[in-house]
Image (cartoon, rainbow, N blue to C red):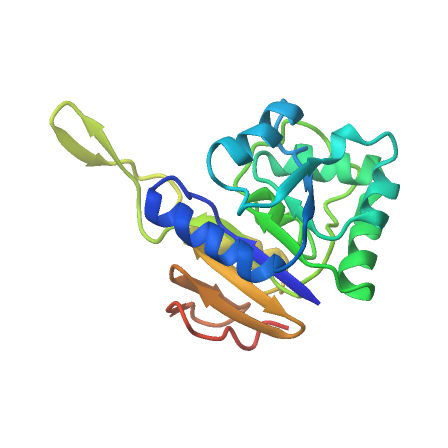
Length: 237
């Protein structure tokens, strides 16, 4: 099973270069990638934007919304990429079109490569319960594709938020990401990886390698610990 799970924030030339490097490493000789843009409202605009912003890795990006039968499109795909946006909207459409099981079967059983960024990473987890997004729609289930046995909190950062007021920065005193993940573990036991911006997790079967940015690992009943790029994430099952 092969998956590439990214946090997001690929907005600088250096980060886009890393994105494309990892994409080419992951997809290899694939010619066409089936792209699922359902996390945003404008599906065609999102699909075109991947190429226009230099985030296509030289591949042909084929939006699933162009297909009359999404399940058939998944069954025929050489590779699958799921973009970021709102995870509630994305998982609702994945369930509505019957793609949760279809994608899982292609990736796990047929061994086609999967790439997810932000919301696309969230739905590769057992559930979408560690998203940062607003519940703009009601999905039939929080259950996700389950390619990995842990949760990811994309766009993670450590510490409190500061906001600018005039010429000064003042502390916001809102909840931190660590607070929210602690609340998740009050009700759930699944490990959570807080993945910093521009970070990737390379997944090869049961091996999870961190690339591009640090991460913080949270396990139920344990102290969180930080992991540097190039490290293998362990004890996540």
